[in-house]
Amino acid sequence: MSKLLIENGTVITLGERSRVLPTHDVLCASGGITRIAPHGEIAAAGARVVSATGKLVMPGFINAHTHLYSSFARGLGKAQPSASFREVLEQLWWRLDRQLDLEDCRYSALVALIEAVRHGTTTLIDHHASPHAARGSLDAIADAVKQVGVRASLCYEVSDRDGAAATREGIKENAAFLKRCASGPDPHLRAMFGLHASFTLSDATLERAATTGDEAGAGFHVHVAEAASDEEASVREHGVRVVERLDRLGILGPQTIAAHCVHVNEREMELLAETGTAVAHNPQSNLNNAVGVADVPGMLRRGILVGLGTDAMTTDMLEELRSALWVRHLAERNPSAAFVETASLVTQGSVAIANRQWGGMLGELAEGKAADLILVDYDPPTPLDESTFLGHLVFGISQATVDSTIVAGRVLMERGKLCLGLDEAEVMAKARERAKALWERF
Ligand SMILES: [Zn+2]
Image 1 (cartoon, rainbow, N blue to C red):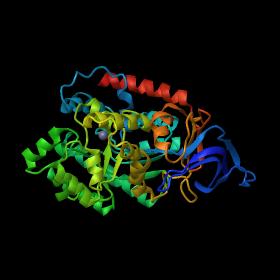
Image 2: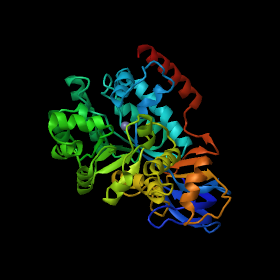
Image 3: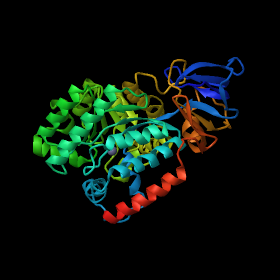
Image 4: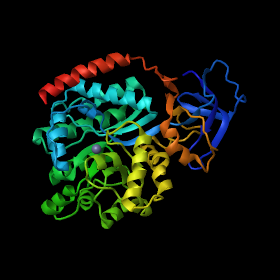
C-alpha cells in the first residue's frame, strides 16, 4: 500500500497521554501510522501528500451503538403519534424493519456510512434488524462497509417478537457472520451476537443465543433497561431485574455491550461492573423517546466502561456529545456536572469499547496505531493545548467542518469531497426510490 504524508497540521494525539502537537507531520503506511514528527523532518519520497495547514489532525470518532437500517425512517410520517416507548417500537421501528429487504439493508447502510465519513466517524458498532430478510443481511451491510471504507462491528438483533422462524433465522444470521469474520479476518469488519432486549426474548432463546455466541467466542450487543417497561416486564415475567436475568443466562461479560441502561439500579450497576460489561450511552435517543437519563457518572464511579452511541439519531459524534453534556447538567441541576467525564465518553470510552474488538489499535494517533484520522478545518481563536482541548472539542471543533477522513490509510474524503469510488448522488437517488417503495408498503 502506498504511503500517505499528512503535512503541517496541529496533531491531537488523544490516547492515555493526549498531546497537542502544532506544525507536525504524520506518515501512514500499510494502514497504520509509522511516524509523527515536527514538520519537515520526515523524508517520504513518493508519498501522497495531504496538506493539513490550518487544520487539526485527530483520530476519527467511534460510534458505540447505532442502527444503520433506520435511514429510511427520515420523513416517514405515516406512524401514529406514540404515547410510550413501546408504542414507538410498535408503530414505527417494528413496522419499518419488517419491510426491509436485502437491497434496502445495503442502501440504508450506504446512506448512513457516507454521512459518517462526512462527520469524521470512522468506526461504528451497529445493531441490525430485518426480520423478513435476516439471512444475508449482515453480508449486505458488510458490502456497504467495505465499499465506503470505514470500520464496523455488525450483529443481527435476535428477538421473539416475529415468531419462532424469525428467531431461528436471527440466530443463524449471527452465527454465519461470526463464522465469516473468524475465517477470513478483515481489518474493517468485526462481529458480535445481537439481541433485541430482555422484554422480547424468552429464556429459551437467550439460552440458545448464549450457547451459539459462546461457541463463536462472541460478545453480545443488547438493549438494556432502555425504558422502565423493560425492567417491569422482567420482574413481572421472570422475577428478576433485566441485568440480573441477562447475567444468569450468560449474556454479560467483557465482550458484551449493554446499550442504554437508563433504568438499572445500584445492584445492576454492580453486576455490570463485576462482569466487565460495557455500556453505550445514547442521550439524544433517550431524550427523543422520553425514557429518562442514564446515570453515567454513577456507572463510571463503579468502574463500568461507558462509551457514547447515537442510536441512529445522528452520525455526528460531537452533536451527540453536546447532548450528553446538556442533559447531564439539567438532570443534576448543575451547570458544571461531569464535564470531563462526559467528554471522555467520546475520546476514551467509545475508543476502549471498540478496542476490545480491534486489539487496541484505534482512537489514538501514535506510531503503530491504525491510520484512522480526520482533518478538521479549525483555527482556534483561543489558546489550544492539552489543558484546553476538551473545551475546544465541545464548543469549537463540534461547530467546525470535517475537511478530510482517512481510514486504514485510505483517503475517504479530501477537502470535503468524497473519494469512495461510488457515485454519492446515485446512491442517494436509489435510496430515495427504495425508501418511497418501502413507505408504500409500510
Ligand atoms: Zn438501539
